[in-house]
Amino acid sequence: MKVLVTGGTGYIGSHTTVELLANGHEVIIVDNLDNSSKIVLDRIEKITGKRPDFIEGDVLDTDFIVRVLKDNRVDAVIHFAALKAVGESVADPLRYYQTNVGGTVSVCKAMLATGVNKIIFSSSATVYGDQPIPYTESTPREPQNPYGRTKFVSELVLADVAAANPDFCAVALRYFNPVGAHPSGEIGEDPNGIPNNLMPYISQVAAGQREKLSVYGNDYPTKDGTAIRDYIHVADLAEGHLAALQKIYDPGFHTFNLGAGHGESVLEVIVAFEQATGQTIPYQFADRRAGDLAEYYADAALAESQLGWRVKRTITDASADAWHWQSGNPNGYKNVV
Ligand code: NAD
Ligand code: UDP
Image 1: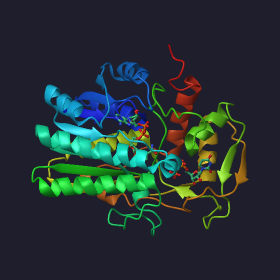
Image 2: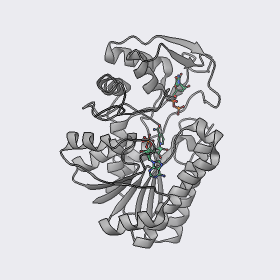
Image 3: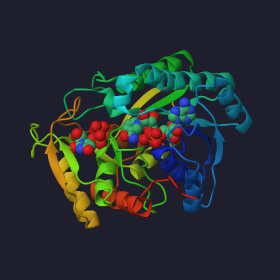
């Protein structure tokens, strides 16, 4: 297939592009480079021997997306492009609604204008909010912050577009906690400034770039008092998109959880990282982080039964790959010539 990958130079988009190219698909990336670098394209070529087409631009520019879809005779869209920082979404909700919901509306409009009717959308486990675990796809959606609500509203947009257009097929993949990097060490997560997320923070502590990890909360009602999440290796996540692409023929709106189906505590992640890498991670306990839930993980049975997909890699694999990427690229893609 010929696939338009929006946000394809980003963290998850780049890993998915590698997987698409490795499986014989053609890829056109559209990205405005708001949170990524063109160097990713060299790295993808290094890994796969193929260079994806790249067009710099904004998904909010519907006429531009129409031209890209028309000129390239695209078969399907994977829509990653979005803003993803929860704290920023609280401070500047309109920017998040504009880019995330507006971007989804714009891409759908361009698809309807050009007769492209297959889309895979990056949703998130954050759409569920504080609900009984494990989350199934029919668990009620009550997102707790503007970022989560932009994903929830985008899903509603896709469902309504699919209902109004009988040939339209939309698949929302609800990611749990993506971690790790490509095993080559060529591509990985490249946060700006101080990382918000656990695995990049641990990686920077291991590299000596940060003194110690703050473990947010050790008084949660969990086995060791620290919060539990369902961490999924980004390569497994990339394979989930391939599995969805192969099944994207049933018109309508479909949702799948992409997670491991079990969780690890923060302390378990630290131990896994230390064992996988031989590095010591100094840490201190700190207050709970506002808005964090004690524990959640996926019921991933639907993706297994319908897409034939399940995770193959562990948190230890993800730790080893994150460290390979971090130690080989201490500044991410920055200052690379
Ligand atoms: P990322 O920031 O690395 O990638 C997003 C890409 O989209 C970036 O390259 C950015 O430059 C681009 N982009 C942003 N706004 C754009 C616009 N208006 N036009 C064109 N390109 C634009 O993020 P990621 O971690 O790869 O996330 C990809 C998708 O997965 C996002 O939709 C995100 O919300 C979703 N998601 C991520 C996580 C996670 O923990 N990383 C979890 C659940 C869902
Ligand atoms: N966490 C932590 N210290 C950090 C970053 C994260 O203890 O520096 C914890 C956080 O409280 C949560 C888990 O690690 O329980 C995963 O956090 P992350 O931000 O990676 O993902 P989230 O689940 O919040 O989307």
